[in-house]
Length: 107
Length: 114
Image (tube, rainbow over all chains, first blue to last red; front, side, top):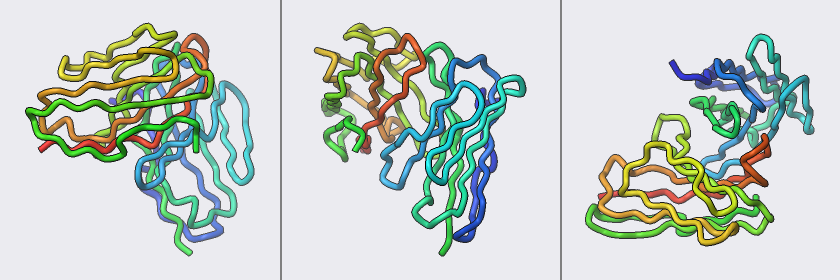
């Protein structure tokens, strides 16, 4: 069993829908990262959080340390949000990655 | 643009070749990382350098040889690779490994071993 589990693996949504991607982890962490990977491979860091909630534009990330669970929300989704979203648990500098959630937003 | 560049972006090499991947950052970061992303598998950490010193080697075969001549440059030397080494190789940097600093990723080098 992977130390970082994401769900769903694949997600298709219509433009404008509210999207939630979940991440559960079993290791102790110093921070939890959400990454976005577009076709072609480049990865962009979206959030790094260790407690509570962060918001950037239409993206919101939350974390519950006690439950070892984090969620990434996208409001008013758009086709340009189509990408693979990866959750990563930073455990004392050692990053453990989830398998990723492939999101497709259709116009 | 994340401030981390990688060259080449694509590489095809035979199993007897020797090649090198290059990563460069001018973000003032002191930690640099090599990751491997194989098809349908999570990212795997390969090597970590902090202030030019290798701090982690994640049981990587010796046919992969990293080099960090200074805090801005990181190389991955490849020799006698196997077809299963075909993958996307990503470089990243962060301010330090000692705390949970955000990592900045390069665009990756897509390697095909024939």
